[in-house]
Image 1 (cartoon, helix red, strand yellow):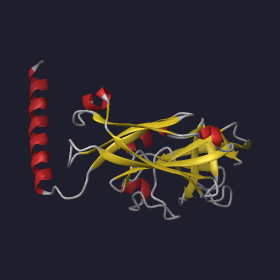
Image 2: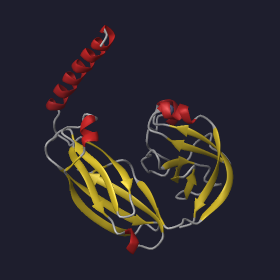
Image 3: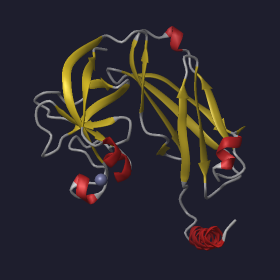
Length: 232
Ligand SMILES: [Zn+2]
């Protein structure tokens, strides 16, 4: 460990101490961290952890709706499975994993929306799951760019979209609604997105993909990709 590393460690320790002090003063609402890691054909797994109550397992609720928005399945479970990888990332002891069985087999083929919440907060964004072989219809090649909640990308709107939905990475795209109507699910490079935003510069065969950070937005740059509509 060289002097520079020691210095950075010290700064991090001070920052952590200041942060924990701040949290203990404002320890009121739950501060949930977590993710939906995988949607398997028989289960949904992830983790959820409350920084304000690190030793109390959270109850997670999974909600599955179909393409028409009808509730298909709702279930709760305790997030208390040991996750060493989560502990290694600094989220408490790691006893905060969950795995919920889901009987996809009993459901008809089609697109489903999966939402996992803990303490009233959505974990890992809203996810799409497609059961069976999706009916894909090519819209042709589109220009794809990226945007994020920063002022320069969002014009001060942050995560607020033109449809009122809260923008989530891996889910939200901005489109020209004359080309792709709001609510349409499209697949780009294997990821299924929902058209729920628009942008001043997004016209014609152009899709703006939402990212959490400006770094990811820059990495996206300008690309061209074939876009498919999912006919659920
Ligand atoms: Zn940005």
